[in-house]
Image (cartoon, rainbow, N blue to C red; front, side, top):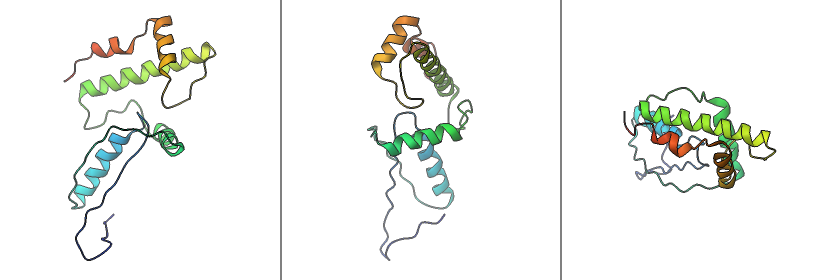
Amino acid sequence: MKLRPFSDHPRGVFITIDGPSGAGKSTIVHHLAQQLVAEGEDVHVTVVAEVSSTWLTWLGLDIVHLMSDPYEQEEWESDAEYARGIAIREHIARLRAWAAENGIKVRPSGRIPFSVQQQYTEATGDDLAAILEQIPKES
């Protein structure tokens, strides 16, 4: 992939990646930046943590979940980041199963309402914050 300028004047290209929390935006940005650098492009990555919630971002999240192995460690992840990611995924899986068993409707992917998270933690004692505190910040 070689970027083509729109005119003879040197210009940059602005690329934006949007999606809900957990959709894989950081992973996409990381891999896209690596690809562009490998092809000789100058890359400057800026992250803004404001998430929109459109049908397109939810579709993107579903596609990322279908295409990726949630237990595969990315080469740029530290062991602690990987462990935190696994802890979060497994917690969310337990939470979704609990919600289904208790007749509480939640989306199969994407955000879970905070009120449901609170109900789950109160009912089961499965506290994600406490679990994450046990994992070192850096490895």
